[in-house]
Length: 316
Image (tube, rainbow, N blue to C red; front, side, top):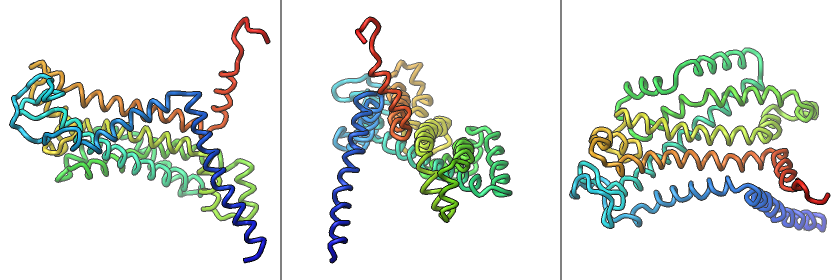
């Protein structure tokens, strides 16, 4: 190997850890200035870890019915029992597995479709963009939840995977419209025009130049699509359009309503799944604040300026 090749290899080896360390410093600096993303990460990790290690956190089967019905929370049953004698804490942990999986899976599908159907046609332009924009507007006019209800009502064996696919395939329109508008704006910027004049292919310009500048929008769409998917899954399960034998946070609410938990004063049957859905949505929203600062340097500069702004009465 020549000396030049050795020099290039050494430079690459040095630049890699420097790049990783700079990214870590960037994230750590954001978490020091703004605690909201850190709080969101902690909340989301707690739910994910509790769902992953559910067999270690509870000895009971979530479907077992050998306990006293509608027992209040105690040392043996931390969140009480249902009207059928099932342990609510076990259902809460195991139900989080499916609810979170459905939410993230459907959110990923909706975001991927929004990126493909929003960016590519708008960049190509012409009749492709016109046709896709018209189809997107039609999807936006159709109400989301009634559309999900109609589709799931006609689909047999509506399990978690089916519900995730239905939510993901019908929840891309808003993200596609936002990404289309941003793509149209970026395609007229100087750096994109320079890349075209340099002979770059359309895919190289789209993926290498435009997409990195839309990272905050893509991640924000993923966050809110995931939140919407979790809410949609809970709504469909609550309406009885899912598989009631599968334990999720939505089916917990469904059986709580069927078992008249409010009339019986069994608050411990209703509050945990509803509060978990709200906290997961809150955690994802808080994480999105950090993603915005990573992808948008102006937000970081504004944070630094506010932090360094002298107080009134302080010597200049």
